[in-house]
Image 1 (cartoon, rainbow, N blue to C red):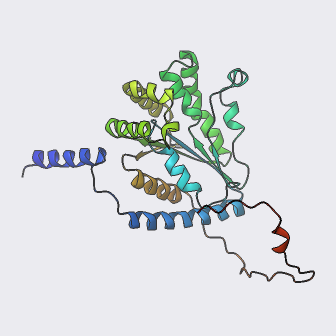
Image 2 (cartoon, rainbow, N blue to C red):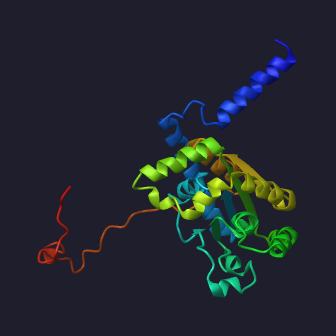
Image 3 (cartoon, rainbow, N blue to C red):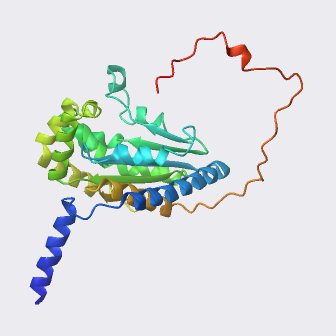
Length: 281
């Protein structure tokens, strides 16, 4: 087989994986790997609190790319007081009159906190740009100032990580069709999602312009192949953990105390006259 033939086979293999046609990850393997990563996230949590670290993780990407899924798995086993999720709604009229970054800065972490942005200030480079929610001047000013803004965060000691979840057009269509027919997912499909589908290539150009302007040494973009949701979650969490030099913080031995029986009484009997939820299951 010649080099050209080998390259063609390699390209076909890559395209097959991008379309989500690769072998599905075994459920038990996925759950075991996820459990190990979530255990590491708990260790990271203790280290962040012990060291007073401040961490920001930005999740961006097309609609239905799986950002919410990975955020859910990250926060599943950790404290919501340490891992805070920020998913801001559309700005109010008052917020529109503020400095653009002002409402995002209000949610930045204090010592011992990790903030996960489910979409972020990069709305200006994406949806606002594509759907004309901002002026050309506002857009250009954002791209020019964003790297400097992020450098100021990093220089101040904040650890900043930016992930772009990349999903193919075919897989996005499949997921959006599933949302239309699934009564538990229909709420995920907004009029904005439908517009984003129609503007697929406009979003692609906006993405490329955003990367060109804001993929910097101090705050690089990391692209996650998100056609396979389970692999995307594992790969993203593993990568995030590998970027942070955390260590397990020793803890004292935990001994569960026995209840103090001084003044003991039948505390279940006092509930007998209360209204209980019917046990239907």
